Image (cartoon, rainbow, N blue to C red):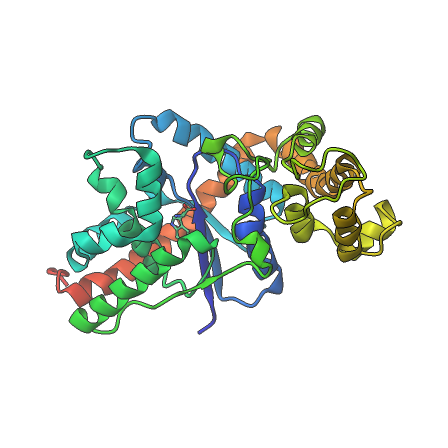
Length: 347
Ligand code: TRP
């Protein structure tokens, strides 16, 4: 049997460059390699509701943004089944039975959840649904028998927990579920792309994002505001490359051809870094260079989005069809699951 690829995003806003390098780039690569039996991309609205239950309208709106982002970035619905999590009720059923196989202390130990809890300030009133979302994520993955999960590093604890559940389930009820593995970006700098402030990972709640749909002016303004080296005041001062966001981004996005085309005084990034370190290269110069590179990446995405926005009915139809298809698989796999659990009473 070939690979079954599955991944997803919480619809809590538009997709940004952190999503792009953290997982979307890999998805596109995998989609175009054609080395799979099935590929799914899921809009994880139920998961998004676990910490946005007081704002369902935001989730509803974001589904529109995310499907537009997917299609404009190049996810091809002819090859990939795109669906909405909450419209597959079998996912909720799986989750319910999985909850028996996980302890409270194991949930509290999940480093990604821990990190989110510390950011969210729930104090002593943690909603149980939020704490359990890794279990629902295990359902997302196993219901579709997914083997390959293109994700950012922050999702690895979820996959580890998924595989623990798979092993426990299979040992109790017989071989039914399949273990999965994460597929990370090639470039390690992409693991945690910093936001333009340089302080933290790019994240909507921190207001430090470059969105895939940002227009040219917004993109230019954001790049010009990027954190560089605060001690690099005059052009001739030696500049620091480490911790300098512009260089972090160049590490991820700049190719040698870009130098040839747009900054021919330097053969490649190493040369530019050396010159910047010595002094004599201004921040505006490196920012302009980065802007050109990012704008070249984002222009076609932006343009496709504009076209797609004109016909939202067709866009929603893609989601509807994908969800219908995913549901068929879900129903079929649910039968096996119930049989293993001995709850298929009338069969
Ligand atoms: N937790 C993921 C995120 O926050 C979204 C997600 C939900 C997911 N279900 C998934 C990712 C299954 C991979 C596989 O981005």
